[in-house]
Image (cartoon, rainbow, N blue to C red; front, side, top):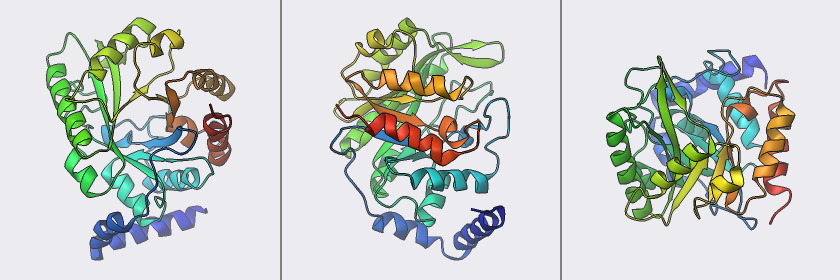
Length: 299
């Protein structure tokens, strides 16, 4: 898609929002849906909920995700590739993708708590400022995702845990997936740092899996960490692995994903920047590689 076409597309979306906002409501009502998982029981989800938390950086470029037209272009390419099951995003991005016709027969997961803005003094006060469980059900989305950062030195963690528990309960009541992304985290100067060692990840898992009145629809979203077989032994919940902000060579990233996908409880990937902003700029090739890893083998 050319830059001129992207700009025209963005202008068209704005015009619809001005003159025909009802098309968004009607579109969610009429969107064709699919089963959450197919025969192989695996999922490849493209993540696009970073901008709503002010996290726009990729590989040191602090504003890599600033252009909405460019991001939408990359998402449309990714969602068009075989083996991509769906997308995770906030209402603004998902509404745009809906109007572009990119969400037909796709799994759609709404991002819920985006209030803990990156770099803010209140980052651990991660309030639910996007989707609610009720809206996810009303719009016929397939799940809701929440970030659960647990800082033992920050009282705001208690409110985040309580709100996340209510979200898990609400989503289960509507029979849709609750995707929980837990970390033990610390404040390191002016930055929040997630602890990615095996023991910290295990503790985060144990806390997260106890949220809500039932775990029957709870899935985990976890980083690829060292000693992953021991880490994954901490839960029976189905787990999707996240990509994070890519830093090393792509081949090393793919190799780590491939090894992790051999574990029985690991059921796929939720990846954003590593696929949407690959070093060579070839979104389709990056997505195809991930799809082959997730769906190529089967169990």
